Length: 181
Image (cartoon, rainbow, N blue to C red; front, side, top):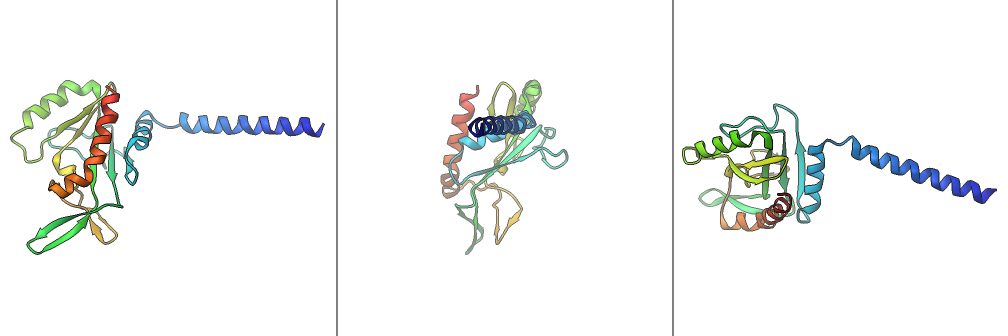
């Protein structure tokens, strides 16, 4: 009888745990699912923050706020950002991507094309999936005015050193999005 009780308890516990796990995934939005999936494919040391609060995501010139935004940063790596001659500061490599609905494809592509050469920081199509157009602008690569601890992020830094430390993330994202076409 004790053995039967133990077996029933184990089965009941397994069912409860399985339901709880399924409920956690069911309550996650599709956008949060994309963010979680991307997080699994980026290099070690990189983190991915999901932002979807309206009015908090920003947008490049000509485009509306996206459905959601992902911010990537690696606080284990730094490069030097020259503030002025003889003075530089360490910067963590970072990247910001905006995700727009693929239903807005034509309008977004028209905007990108029309702003291309006339804008210092034009929106650029980073990737495209069945569900999303992923947009960034060069100022969002190694950029942010936020201060984290004693380190301030850079301002659209594209030096050889900065490009080298962000290259593994860029390659991982390219591979990820190529697989989602």
